[in-house]
Length: 195
Image 1 (tube, rainbow, N blue to C red):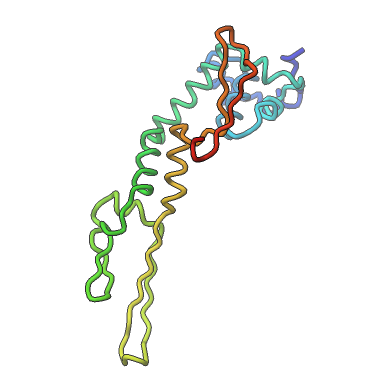
Image 2 (image 1 turned 45 degrees about the vertical axis):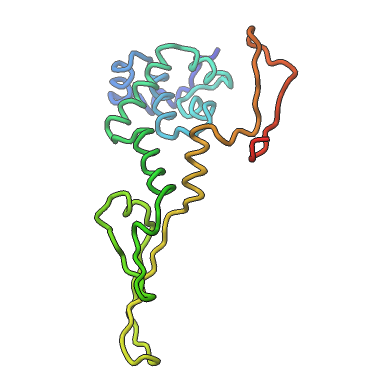
């Protein structure tokens, strides 16, 4: 039976916190534990989340994810996290955009072979910088102290790659489904250059 749970999990989590979570989300305590495990680690295998919630059956995750109330509880948990942290897809895309489209000429100025930081007041400019290191040392050759500044930018390539993946630009396989939902024999592989 898919709803069969391990007894020690019921005893371990038989407290008000999980009962309240279940009541608030309209799910059973076991379902609340499953939702909680998935929300705690979104990359976790759904079967592991079901096992961690105390379910014994290998098909428990599949059964749980077919229940509307469980799906609604997961959605509610995700939405609550978004409103709590204010981290949205748009905000992440905007940060990646700052890194991917940063222009070093907007940040640095070169005069007579001397590089100076031009404008750090701009949030976009400062977001594109990964680190700034300064060291001061005595240069015997010129007989004075010299300050060396190293500015490391975030990887433009990585930021642009992540933006492109978000937009679906680098799909390696294109599958075309028929009107009835079955996958026809035609599967087209696409190279990175789009051919």
